[in-house]
Length: 418
Figure 1 (spheres, one colour):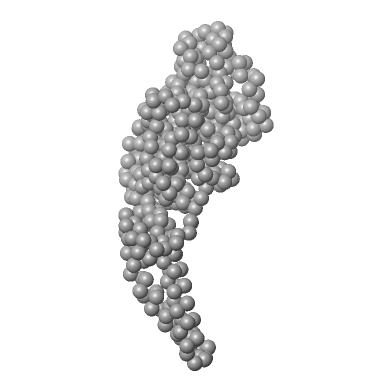
Figure 2 (tube, one colour):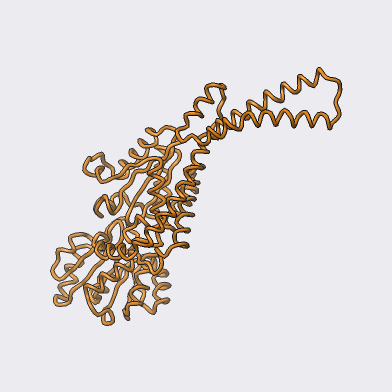
C-alpha cells in the first residue's frame, strides 16, 4: 500500500493560486464525491494556507496519478505554470509532512492550534463521504495524536499566535492607536471570532460584526459588546470604519473596487485599512490600488510570522523529536500492515496442514481420551508455531518486504485483500 500527497501551500504558491483550489467546509462533501471518480480512497485537507489531497493505493503510480488528475480538475486546467506550484510526495515523506502539519510545524504561524482541528475535520468529512480505508484512517489518527502530544509536551502552542491574531497585529501597525478605531469584522466563523477577540484584547472599543446569517453576527457581537449587522449594510459600515478584517467563507469577492471607490469619495481624508485573510479572497485585488486604501492579504503576514517562528525555535526542536518518534511508530505499523496478509496466509496454510495431518493420524490410533487428544493438539500446534516464529519475525523486520514476497512465492500462498 502506498501513500501519495499532492497539494499547494503558503510556501509553494501565492494566494492567487491557493484560492483556485481552496475548498470551503460547505463544498467539501461534494468535492470528496468528485474525488471518488479518480480513486476510492482519499482525504482532502483544505485550510487558509493549504489544499492537500492524500490518496492510497497498492500501486504507487496509480495513487499519484489519481491525486494529480483530481488536482488538475480542481484547477480546471493542465497549465504547467499552475501545476509547478504543487508538491507531490509519497510514502514516508508524505507521512512526515502530515505529522508536521498536524503539529503546527508546517504552518505560516508556527505552533498555531487551529490546524489540528482542521486535520481532524478533514478526516471526519472523508469518513462521512466513505472515502477512508484502514491505512488512511490510521495515518490521520496518528497525525492527530502526534499533534496533541506536541502541544501537551512542549510550549510550541503556549501563547501561540494565529492567522487571525497576526492580522490584528498587522492592523495595529498600520493604524497605531486601536482604542480610537472602529473595526468591521466580516465573517462570524471561527476566524472571525478570533479576530474580534484579539481586537478586543488590544483595546478596540468599537467592533462591528457582519455575517451572511444575521443570527451568528448577533451571537458573536453580544459576547464582545459589539454591534451586529447584515451583509446588505456593508457599504454604510465601510463609510465609517477604520479597519476591515475579512474572513468569510465565500466563493466570490464580497468587496469590490467599485464599491470602495464610491465609499472613499465620501471619506477622502480618512484612510481605510483592509486585511483579507479569507481563502478564496473576500476582496478584489484592485481595491488595493485605490488612493488612501491599504489592502493586505494573508501572504502579507509573513514578516510577523517569521518573528513568531524565531521565538519558538527551541520548542520547535523539541516538537520535531516527538514527531520523529511518532513517525517511527506509524511506519512500524504500516510495515506490519503490508506483511499482514502474507503472515495470515502462511499461518492459515500451516494450520490447515497441521489439523488435516493430525486428523488422519488420530484415525489410525486407538481411541484417545479428551485429555490425550488435547495434549496431542497442543504439541502439534506448538511445533508449527515454533517453526513459523523465526520466518514471521524476519518478514516483519524487513523494511523492503523482500522476505514477504519470497515467502509468498515459496509457500504458494493465497492472499486475501485487507
